[in-house]
Length: 96
Image (spheres, rainbow, N blue to C red):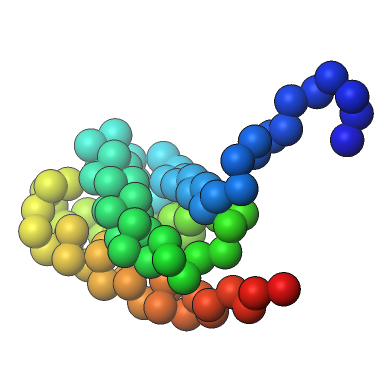
């Protein structure tokens, strides 16, 4: 690290980013609803996440025919279930 440059992540903590490309969720309201679910579910799993930067990225579309409303309880439940499955695969970090 060069002298004079600030650290990218100045505090040792769990950092989480959410990427929801327009390609997979066309409407901004849908993208924002999915991001809110990502942040809410990740807060439940924060104790088991290692202290580093993590990025959750949507890699496939949620079918608009099945999820008509971006704020529907059905969409929220589907996103939450998928995120809980993803975060449940995270291993507890081993202390050095």
